[in-house]
Image 1: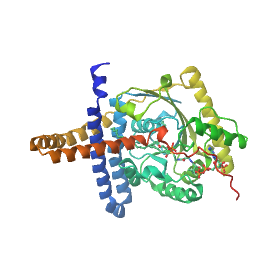
Image 2: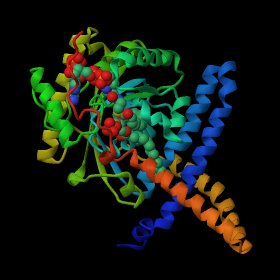
Image 3: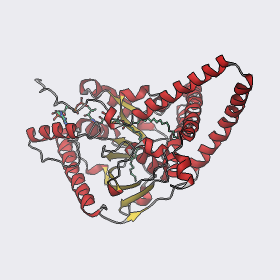
Image 4: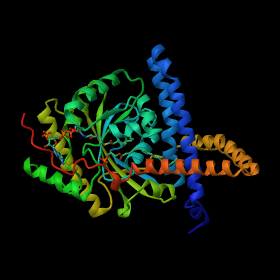
Length: 377
Ligand SMILES: CC/C=C\C/C=C\C/C=C\C/C=C\C/C=C\C/C=C\CCC(=O)SCCNC(=O)CCNC(=O)[C@H](O)C(C)(C)COP(=O)(O)OP(=O)(O)OC[C@H]1O[C@@H](n2cnc3c(N)ncnc32)[C@H](O)[C@@H]1OP(=O)(O)O
Ligand SMILES: CCCCCCCCCCCCCCCCCC(=O)OC[C@@H](O)COP(=O)(O)O
């Protein structure tokens, strides 16, 4: 193990990184709160300001992936579509099997200049995660309870609000609705069988309602669906803790651009279209398992310096006062102050550990573990 690698695995380094993320995140959340009056004066300006503030948070995690862990990302796509990426609004459909799939998604957003504005159909529980969840309120992220009776109205309303959004965004949909586990896969294949649908080997059966409502409500503003299939080289199982430890991964993303006009408007036809899409995605994963690559030409969009610059800026701004505080603390010699400070640091570390836990599959929800009861209506 080289010196740099050893350094990256040190707990003290992790503490410093987490301190910068936590304090800068809370400062940015506060700044976002200060933009509230601006929404009344100029909604579009408030949105643009919040896009930039959100970039300051999200890009720290992207910097950890790109610069700290040195993870590489290869894109498999039709070169003809490449110039359109980042220059139009799009819905992204992505498989949900990896703990850092959202972060790889963010990395591609960063490289195509849409990181600050990008959106997702997220489970409501994530809205309460400090920093990221709070940041999402100001980005007009669409939350769902995964209870269709409630979601059909609230999700449609939130999507309608995006019609006059001033900047290009990618709207991410994990149609599987939850992360893949062997148990969830087994249950979902029972559902597939009961519906007479072909079995999927690498995906859960997609939930079609969220996709249909998104396509219908964003029609006219969004140009295309980017069907995206993610995998990692050498059967790597990437985690956020691995990233923090400086472990390098190699992500491969296969993207097909499908113009929105090609997606059926009728709900049943749209559902059938999505099921067919997932059968195709399954065949791409099979291809990857056999050949260690996706079909088609590759391109590696370069990482940009902005994530690193933003990260270094916050480090410089926040590490100096921390240094002063620590010096004062030690020189004060007060046992009580030292004990209180250690307790605060422990609480903050546990808080960050809890946040990281939100990304861990083995701490995931039980959604999809049981087949939904048959609806009598
Ligand atoms: C060039 C580069 C391109 C791309 C780069 C890639 C990506 C970058 C893009 C953007 C990045 C932006 C942000 C990323 C940052 C962070 C993201 C982080 C995380 C958020 C992720 C989540 O929170 S995922 C969870 C929430 N989302 C979803 O659930 C979406 C999918 N779900 C739905 O659509 C659902 O339909 C619903 C939520 C709208 C409603 O759910 P509900 O459960 O109430 O209803 P359902 O319709 O799903 O259920 C009833 C029907 O389902 C059948 N059923 C029952 N059991 C199962 C089962 N186990 N599996 C499958 N189906 C089942 C049941 O029979 C019913 O069937 P019907 O025929 O009646 O529909
Ligand atoms: C700069 C680096 C600092 C690193 C330290 C701080 C890290 C804190 C990171 C917190 C990130 C929280 C973002 C939440 C994104 C979670 C994405 C996700 O995958 O959600 C799961 C849902 O889709 C489905 O849930 P399940 O039904 O599977 O359950």
